[in-house]
Length: 193
Ligand code: ADP
Image (cartoon, rainbow, N blue to C red):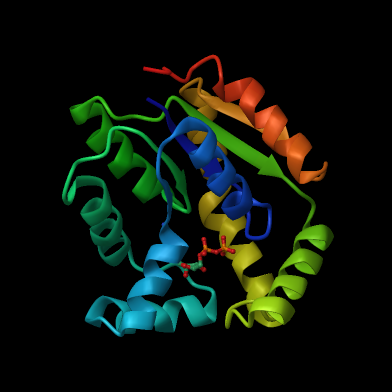
């Protein structure tokens, strides 16, 4: 059973790699952005509240994000393995989820950071916006999301480095090569049972 976090700025490839890794390791890929967008599309009260933050490129308040992710982790059949993407995204969320995980024996085995420089991220996100019409993939919001990442999420690299579970992977090589390099990190810790 594998529990891993993909920790990287918008556009670094968390979604693409998350899907692939979920298939490889037989665990669900949980992307908070996708879970939140589903709430928005369904027009739930939570989605209506979250949308205003998402459209501005701000973090959705912890209370809303926690409830979305906890619902998914504990609702129905509780999950023991997962590839998380997009949570935690602030030190507060990291501390809360670490405490929550410790109490249940569900901390991450590994945290994978995907490094891609800013110009490349902006180009990728503009292209995604052109193709998918995702409302937060416009230049102004993209730049803001990158600032929000630097301020709120980048400090988590140290948080996990200090806990000895951070692995840094170059996110600018081909998609297949990124997957291979992540596998080199995760294969040894994945329990295949
Ligand atoms: P990206 O990584 O490209 O920004 P996501 O789909 O992961 O895209 O997230 C889209 C938006 O959803 C974020 O800009 C933010 O508003 C919200 N969001 C996702 N995860 C979280 C989180 N853990 N905490 C707060 N807001 C979040």
